[in-house]
Length: 409
Image (tube, rainbow, N blue to C red; front, side, top):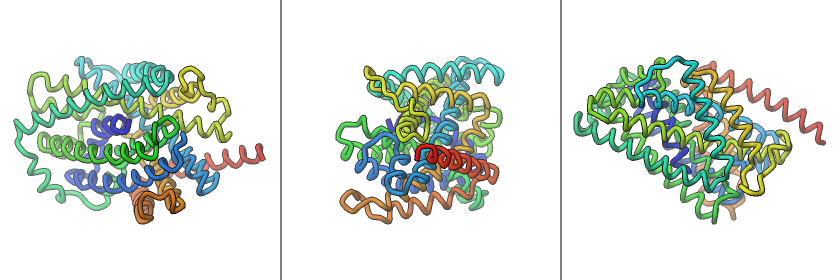
Protein backbone atom coordinates (compact mmCIF):
# COMPACT_ATOMS: atom_id res chain seq x y z
CA UNK A 1 0.00 0.00 0.00
CA UNK A 2 2.89 2.36 0.73
CA UNK A 3 4.44 1.84 -2.71
CA UNK A 4 1.06 2.19 -4.36
CA UNK A 5 0.53 5.50 -2.57
CA UNK A 6 3.89 6.98 -3.56
CA UNK A 7 4.65 5.57 -7.01
CA UNK A 8 2.18 7.64 -8.97
CA UNK A 9 1.41 11.34 -9.15
CA UNK A 10 4.76 12.27 -7.60
CA UNK A 11 6.89 10.50 -10.15
CA UNK A 12 4.67 10.99 -13.21
CA UNK A 13 3.63 14.63 -12.62
CA UNK A 14 5.17 16.45 -9.63
CA UNK A 15 8.83 15.90 -10.59
CA UNK A 16 8.21 18.09 -13.64
CA UNK A 17 6.37 20.71 -11.55
CA UNK A 18 9.31 20.89 -9.13
CA UNK A 19 11.83 20.96 -12.02
CA UNK A 20 10.03 23.97 -13.49
CA UNK A 21 10.74 25.80 -10.21
CA UNK A 22 14.26 24.59 -9.38
CA UNK A 23 15.81 23.48 -12.70
CA UNK A 24 18.81 21.19 -12.20
CA UNK A 25 18.38 21.68 -8.46
CA UNK A 26 15.55 19.14 -8.55
CA UNK A 27 18.10 16.43 -7.69
CA UNK A 28 19.01 18.28 -4.48
CA UNK A 29 15.32 18.88 -3.75
CA UNK A 30 14.55 15.16 -4.07
CA UNK A 31 17.31 14.33 -1.57
CA UNK A 32 16.23 17.03 0.92
CA UNK A 33 12.61 15.88 0.69
CA UNK A 34 13.68 12.26 1.12
CA UNK A 35 15.62 13.01 4.31
CA UNK A 36 12.67 14.91 5.79
CA UNK A 37 10.25 12.20 4.67
CA UNK A 38 12.39 9.57 6.40
CA UNK A 39 12.17 11.45 9.72
CA UNK A 40 8.42 11.76 9.25
CA UNK A 41 8.11 8.13 8.22
CA UNK A 42 9.86 6.96 11.39
CA UNK A 43 7.65 9.21 13.53
CA UNK A 44 4.56 7.84 11.80
CA UNK A 45 5.84 4.29 12.20
CA UNK A 46 6.30 4.44 15.96
CA UNK A 47 2.99 6.25 16.49
CA UNK A 48 1.13 3.72 14.34
CA UNK A 49 2.84 0.78 16.03
CA UNK A 50 1.97 2.09 19.51
CA UNK A 51 -1.61 3.08 18.57
CA UNK A 52 -2.82 1.01 15.59
CA UNK A 53 -6.13 2.78 14.98
CA UNK A 54 -7.72 4.24 11.85
CA UNK A 55 -7.22 7.98 11.52
CA UNK A 56 -3.44 8.46 11.64
CA UNK A 57 -2.25 11.83 13.00
CA UNK A 58 -5.82 12.93 13.65
CA UNK A 59 -5.96 10.28 16.38
CA UNK A 60 -2.39 10.85 17.60
CA UNK A 61 -2.96 14.61 17.87
CA UNK A 62 -6.13 14.09 19.90
CA UNK A 63 -4.38 11.62 22.18
CA UNK A 64 -1.18 13.54 22.90
CA UNK A 65 -1.85 17.22 22.08
CA UNK A 66 -5.56 17.83 22.55
CA UNK A 67 -8.61 18.13 20.32
CA UNK A 68 -7.59 21.34 18.53
CA UNK A 69 -4.31 19.88 17.29
CA UNK A 70 -6.03 16.61 16.46
CA UNK A 71 -8.78 18.32 14.51
CA UNK A 72 -6.27 20.51 12.64
CA UNK A 73 -4.34 17.39 11.61
CA UNK A 74 -7.47 15.66 10.34
CA UNK A 75 -8.70 18.80 8.59
CA UNK A 76 -5.33 19.40 6.89
CA UNK A 77 -5.15 15.76 5.82
CA UNK A 78 -8.59 15.90 4.21
CA UNK A 79 -7.79 19.11 2.33
CA UNK A 80 -4.27 18.17 1.24
CA UNK A 81 -4.94 14.64 0.16
CA UNK A 82 -8.21 15.48 -1.57
CA UNK A 83 -6.18 17.94 -3.67
CA UNK A 84 -3.53 15.27 -4.30
CA UNK A 85 -6.23 12.79 -5.32
CA UNK A 86 -7.69 15.33 -7.76
CA UNK A 87 -4.19 15.69 -9.27
CA UNK A 88 -4.01 11.91 -9.65
CA UNK A 89 -7.41 11.80 -11.37
CA UNK A 90 -6.47 14.51 -13.88
CA UNK A 91 -3.04 12.97 -14.47
CA UNK A 92 -4.57 9.55 -15.07
CA UNK A 93 -7.03 10.95 -17.60
CA UNK A 94 -4.26 12.86 -19.41
CA UNK A 95 -1.98 9.82 -19.74
CA UNK A 96 -4.98 7.70 -20.79
CA UNK A 97 -5.70 9.99 -23.75
CA UNK A 98 -1.99 10.05 -24.64
CA UNK A 99 -2.04 6.25 -24.62
CA UNK A 100 -4.70 6.26 -27.33
CA UNK A 101 -3.23 9.35 -29.07
CA UNK A 102 -6.42 11.37 -28.65
CA UNK A 103 -6.45 15.17 -28.17
CA UNK A 104 -9.32 16.39 -26.00
CA UNK A 105 -10.61 19.57 -24.39
CA UNK A 106 -10.32 20.34 -20.69
CA UNK A 107 -14.01 19.59 -20.16
CA UNK A 108 -13.65 16.12 -21.72
CA UNK A 109 -10.58 15.53 -19.55
CA UNK A 110 -12.53 16.49 -16.42
CA UNK A 111 -15.53 14.30 -17.33
CA UNK A 112 -13.25 11.33 -17.97
CA UNK A 113 -11.58 11.95 -14.63
CA UNK A 114 -14.95 11.90 -12.86
CA UNK A 115 -15.69 8.52 -14.48
CA UNK A 116 -12.34 7.12 -13.29
CA UNK A 117 -12.99 8.47 -9.79
CA UNK A 118 -16.40 6.80 -9.66
CA UNK A 119 -14.92 3.45 -10.66
CA UNK A 120 -12.20 3.58 -7.98
CA UNK A 121 -14.63 4.75 -5.28
CA UNK A 122 -16.83 1.72 -5.92
CA UNK A 123 -13.75 -0.55 -5.76
CA UNK A 124 -12.57 0.84 -2.41
CA UNK A 125 -16.05 0.60 -0.89
CA UNK A 126 -15.74 -3.20 -1.21
CA UNK A 127 -13.10 -3.47 1.54
CA UNK A 128 -9.31 -3.51 1.99
CA UNK A 129 -8.62 -7.09 0.82
CA UNK A 130 -10.03 -6.43 -2.63
CA UNK A 131 -8.27 -3.07 -2.71
CA UNK A 132 -4.90 -4.62 -1.77
CA UNK A 133 -5.07 -7.20 -4.59
CA UNK A 134 -5.75 -4.46 -7.13
CA UNK A 135 -2.92 -2.41 -5.60
CA UNK A 136 -0.35 -5.23 -6.07
CA UNK A 137 -1.23 -5.54 -9.76
CA UNK A 138 -1.06 -1.76 -10.25
CA UNK A 139 2.35 -1.37 -8.56
CA UNK A 140 3.88 -4.24 -10.57
CA UNK A 141 2.77 -2.79 -13.91
CA UNK A 142 3.97 0.69 -12.93
CA UNK A 143 7.45 -0.43 -11.88
CA UNK A 144 7.88 -2.43 -15.10
CA UNK A 145 6.92 0.63 -17.17
CA UNK A 146 9.36 2.89 -15.33
CA UNK A 147 12.11 0.27 -15.70
CA UNK A 148 11.51 0.27 -19.46
CA UNK A 149 11.87 4.07 -19.63
CA UNK A 150 15.05 4.15 -17.54
CA UNK A 151 16.61 1.28 -19.53
CA UNK A 152 15.78 2.91 -22.87
CA UNK A 153 17.19 6.22 -21.66
CA UNK A 154 20.43 4.56 -20.54
CA UNK A 155 20.86 2.72 -23.83
CA UNK A 156 20.33 5.81 -26.01
CA UNK A 157 21.77 8.59 -23.83
CA UNK A 158 24.20 6.77 -21.56
CA UNK A 159 24.66 7.31 -17.83
CA UNK A 160 23.12 10.58 -16.49
CA UNK A 161 26.46 12.21 -15.68
CA UNK A 162 25.61 15.78 -16.75
CA UNK A 163 22.50 16.15 -14.52
CA UNK A 164 24.60 15.12 -11.52
CA UNK A 165 27.48 17.49 -12.37
CA UNK A 166 25.10 20.40 -13.07
CA UNK A 167 22.71 20.03 -10.14
CA UNK A 168 24.21 23.05 -8.34
CA UNK A 169 24.01 25.31 -11.42
CA UNK A 170 21.20 27.75 -12.26
CA UNK A 171 19.21 27.33 -9.02
CA UNK A 172 19.04 29.43 -5.88
CA UNK A 173 18.32 28.18 -2.37
CA UNK A 174 14.78 29.56 -2.37
CA UNK A 175 13.74 27.66 -5.49
CA UNK A 176 15.38 24.46 -4.25
CA UNK A 177 13.57 24.65 -0.89
CA UNK A 178 10.25 25.40 -2.62
CA UNK A 179 10.81 22.38 -4.88
CA UNK A 180 11.72 20.32 -1.80
CA UNK A 181 8.35 21.18 -0.26
CA UNK A 182 6.58 20.06 -3.44
CA UNK A 183 8.60 16.84 -3.62
CA UNK A 184 7.93 16.12 0.06
CA UNK A 185 4.25 15.76 -0.84
CA UNK A 186 5.25 13.12 -3.38
CA UNK A 187 6.82 10.97 -0.64
CA UNK A 188 4.04 11.12 1.89
CA UNK A 189 2.12 8.05 0.78
CA UNK A 190 3.68 6.11 3.66
CA UNK A 191 1.14 7.86 5.88
CA UNK A 192 -1.54 5.69 4.27
CA UNK A 193 0.03 2.69 6.00
CA UNK A 194 -0.43 4.36 9.39
CA UNK A 195 -4.08 5.26 8.75
CA UNK A 196 -4.90 1.58 8.18
CA UNK A 197 -3.70 0.50 11.63
CA UNK A 198 -6.89 -1.35 12.61
CA UNK A 199 -6.81 -3.49 9.47
CA UNK A 200 -3.20 -4.75 9.57
CA UNK A 201 -1.97 -7.98 11.14
CA UNK A 202 0.77 -7.54 13.81
CA UNK A 203 0.87 -3.72 13.44
CA UNK A 204 3.86 -3.20 15.77
CA UNK A 205 6.03 -5.19 13.36
CA UNK A 206 4.30 -4.75 10.03
CA UNK A 207 3.78 -0.97 10.00
CA UNK A 208 7.37 0.21 10.75
CA UNK A 209 8.81 -2.40 8.38
CA UNK A 210 6.46 -1.41 5.56
CA UNK A 211 7.16 2.33 5.96
CA UNK A 212 10.96 1.96 6.04
CA UNK A 213 11.05 -0.47 3.09
CA UNK A 214 8.75 1.75 1.02
CA UNK A 215 10.96 4.81 1.67
CA UNK A 216 14.18 3.05 0.59
CA UNK A 217 12.66 1.83 -2.67
CA UNK A 218 11.03 5.19 -3.46
CA UNK A 219 14.14 7.34 -2.95
CA UNK A 220 16.10 5.15 -5.37
CA UNK A 221 13.24 5.19 -7.87
CA UNK A 222 12.70 8.99 -7.77
CA UNK A 223 16.39 9.73 -8.25
CA UNK A 224 16.72 7.23 -11.10
CA UNK A 225 13.69 8.45 -13.04
CA UNK A 226 14.42 12.17 -12.54
CA UNK A 227 18.04 11.74 -13.64
CA UNK A 228 16.83 9.86 -16.72
CA UNK A 229 14.35 12.64 -17.61
CA UNK A 230 16.97 15.38 -17.18
CA UNK A 231 19.52 13.42 -19.19
CA UNK A 232 17.09 13.01 -22.10
CA UNK A 233 15.43 16.45 -22.21
CA UNK A 234 17.37 18.84 -19.98
CA UNK A 235 15.84 20.61 -16.99
CA UNK A 236 14.27 23.54 -18.86
CA UNK A 237 12.46 21.43 -21.46
CA UNK A 238 11.35 18.89 -18.87
CA UNK A 239 9.97 21.62 -16.61
CA UNK A 240 7.93 23.01 -19.50
CA UNK A 241 6.14 19.67 -20.00
CA UNK A 242 3.58 20.65 -17.34
CA UNK A 243 2.53 23.79 -19.23
CA UNK A 244 -1.02 22.86 -20.20
CA UNK A 245 -0.17 19.16 -19.86
CA UNK A 246 -0.34 16.53 -17.14
CA UNK A 247 1.80 13.84 -18.77
CA UNK A 248 5.50 14.84 -18.41
CA UNK A 249 7.06 11.37 -18.67
CA UNK A 250 5.13 10.79 -21.88
CA UNK A 251 7.04 13.75 -23.34
CA UNK A 252 10.29 12.15 -22.14
CA UNK A 253 9.35 8.87 -23.83
CA UNK A 254 8.47 10.69 -27.07
CA UNK A 255 11.89 12.38 -27.05
CA UNK A 256 13.54 8.94 -27.18
CA UNK A 257 11.83 8.10 -30.51
CA UNK A 258 11.76 4.38 -29.70
CA UNK A 259 8.77 2.36 -30.93
CA UNK A 260 6.31 1.31 -28.21
CA UNK A 261 8.11 3.08 -25.32
CA UNK A 262 5.48 5.88 -25.29
CA UNK A 263 2.48 3.56 -24.91
CA UNK A 264 4.36 1.50 -22.28
CA UNK A 265 5.05 4.60 -20.15
CA UNK A 266 1.51 5.90 -20.61
CA UNK A 267 0.02 2.57 -19.55
CA UNK A 268 2.31 2.47 -16.50
CA UNK A 269 1.30 6.03 -15.66
CA UNK A 270 -2.39 5.20 -15.88
CA UNK A 271 -1.96 2.25 -13.50
CA UNK A 272 0.17 4.38 -11.17
CA UNK A 273 -2.42 7.13 -10.94
CA UNK A 274 -5.09 4.50 -10.27
CA UNK A 275 -2.91 3.12 -7.47
CA UNK A 276 -2.45 6.54 -5.90
CA UNK A 277 -6.15 7.29 -6.19
CA UNK A 278 -7.06 3.94 -4.63
CA UNK A 279 -4.75 4.55 -1.69
CA UNK A 280 -5.84 8.15 -1.21
CA UNK A 281 -9.50 7.16 -1.11
CA UNK A 282 -8.58 4.50 1.47
CA UNK A 283 -6.65 6.96 3.65
CA UNK A 284 -9.11 9.85 3.36
CA UNK A 285 -12.11 7.66 4.14
CA UNK A 286 -10.40 6.22 7.26
CA UNK A 287 -9.68 9.71 8.57
CA UNK A 288 -13.32 10.68 7.90
CA UNK A 289 -14.34 7.52 9.77
CA UNK A 290 -12.23 8.53 12.75
CA UNK A 291 -13.49 12.15 12.71
CA UNK A 292 -17.06 10.85 12.50
CA UNK A 293 -16.48 8.72 15.60
CA UNK A 294 -15.38 11.80 17.55
CA UNK A 295 -18.28 13.87 16.12
CA UNK A 296 -15.89 16.31 14.43
CA UNK A 297 -17.73 15.31 11.26
CA UNK A 298 -21.28 13.94 10.92
CA UNK A 299 -21.69 10.64 12.80
CA UNK A 300 -22.99 8.78 9.72
CA UNK A 301 -19.40 8.74 8.42
CA UNK A 302 -18.48 6.36 11.27
CA UNK A 303 -20.77 3.62 9.98
CA UNK A 304 -18.98 0.42 8.87
CA UNK A 305 -20.61 -2.05 6.49
CA UNK A 306 -20.83 -5.37 8.40
CA UNK A 307 -20.19 -7.46 5.28
CA UNK A 308 -17.20 -5.69 3.71
CA UNK A 309 -15.90 -4.10 6.96
CA UNK A 310 -15.53 -0.90 4.92
CA UNK A 311 -16.71 2.58 6.03
CA UNK A 312 -18.92 2.95 2.95
CA UNK A 313 -20.46 6.40 3.77
CA UNK A 314 -16.96 7.82 4.35
CA UNK A 315 -15.68 6.30 1.09
CA UNK A 316 -18.57 7.75 -0.92
CA UNK A 317 -18.17 11.18 0.70
CA UNK A 318 -14.46 11.10 -0.11
CA UNK A 319 -15.30 10.46 -3.76
CA UNK A 320 -17.64 13.45 -3.87
CA UNK A 321 -15.06 15.83 -2.32
CA UNK A 322 -12.33 14.72 -4.74
CA UNK A 323 -14.77 15.08 -7.63
CA UNK A 324 -15.41 18.72 -6.75
CA UNK A 325 -11.66 19.45 -6.88
CA UNK A 326 -11.30 17.60 -10.19
CA UNK A 327 -13.58 20.24 -11.71
CA UNK A 328 -10.70 22.77 -11.46
CA UNK A 329 -8.83 20.90 -14.21
CA UNK A 330 -5.45 22.31 -13.05
CA UNK A 331 -2.79 19.87 -11.78
CA UNK A 332 -0.23 22.56 -10.85
CA UNK A 333 -2.71 24.36 -8.59
CA UNK A 334 -4.03 21.21 -6.88
CA UNK A 335 -0.52 19.86 -6.22
CA UNK A 336 0.94 23.14 -4.97
CA UNK A 337 -2.06 23.77 -2.70
CA UNK A 338 -1.57 20.38 -1.07
CA UNK A 339 2.08 21.11 -0.17
CA UNK A 340 1.52 23.62 2.66
CA UNK A 341 -1.31 21.65 4.27
CA UNK A 342 0.65 18.38 4.11
CA UNK A 343 3.62 20.00 5.86
CA UNK A 344 1.34 21.29 8.66
CA UNK A 345 -0.17 17.80 9.00
CA UNK A 346 3.25 16.18 9.43
CA UNK A 347 4.39 18.91 11.81
CA UNK A 348 1.61 17.69 14.11
CA UNK A 349 2.70 14.08 13.48
CA UNK A 350 6.23 14.82 14.70
CA UNK A 351 4.99 16.91 17.62
CA UNK A 352 2.78 13.98 18.69
CA UNK A 353 5.74 11.59 18.44
CA UNK A 354 7.72 13.80 20.83
CA UNK A 355 5.09 13.06 23.50
CA UNK A 356 5.21 9.27 23.14
CA UNK A 357 6.02 7.58 26.48
CA UNK A 358 9.41 5.85 26.63
CA UNK A 359 7.93 2.34 26.64
CA UNK A 360 6.26 3.00 23.26
CA UNK A 361 9.22 4.74 21.67
CA UNK A 362 11.04 2.90 18.86
CA UNK A 363 13.47 5.68 17.90
CA UNK A 364 15.31 8.56 19.69
CA UNK A 365 13.49 11.88 20.26
CA UNK A 366 15.88 13.59 17.86
CA UNK A 367 14.01 11.91 14.95
CA UNK A 368 10.63 13.64 15.51
CA UNK A 369 12.43 16.85 16.58
CA UNK A 370 14.25 17.06 13.23
CA UNK A 371 11.07 16.11 11.40
CA UNK A 372 9.12 18.89 13.14
CA UNK A 373 11.79 21.50 12.39
CA UNK A 374 12.04 20.42 8.74
CA UNK A 375 8.28 20.55 8.14
CA UNK A 376 7.81 24.00 9.68
CA UNK A 377 10.91 25.32 7.89
CA UNK A 378 9.89 24.08 4.42
CA UNK A 379 6.25 25.17 4.82
CA UNK A 380 7.22 28.83 4.63
CA UNK A 381 9.24 28.56 1.41
CA UNK A 382 6.06 27.81 -0.54
CA UNK A 383 4.41 30.53 -2.65
CA UNK A 384 2.59 33.08 -0.44
CA UNK A 385 -0.75 32.43 -2.16
CA UNK A 386 -0.79 28.81 -1.01
CA UNK A 387 0.40 29.74 2.50
CA UNK A 388 -2.46 32.24 2.79
CA UNK A 389 -5.00 29.72 1.48
CA UNK A 390 -3.71 27.08 3.89
CA UNK A 391 -3.84 29.36 6.94
CA UNK A 392 -7.33 30.47 5.92
CA UNK A 393 -8.51 26.85 5.76
CA UNK A 394 -6.99 26.15 9.21
CA UNK A 395 -8.89 29.09 10.72
CA UNK A 396 -12.17 28.00 9.10
CA UNK A 397 -11.67 24.48 10.44
CA UNK A 398 -10.89 25.63 13.97
CA UNK A 399 -14.01 27.82 14.07
CA UNK A 400 -16.08 24.81 12.96
CA UNK A 401 -14.42 22.62 15.61
CA UNK A 402 -15.08 25.13 18.38
CA UNK A 403 -18.76 25.40 17.42
CA UNK A 404 -19.21 21.62 17.29
CA UNK A 405 -17.32 21.19 20.56
CA UNK A 406 -19.61 23.66 22.32
CA UNK A 407 -22.71 21.90 20.95
CA UNK A 408 -21.57 18.57 22.35
CA UNK A 409 -20.29 19.84 25.73
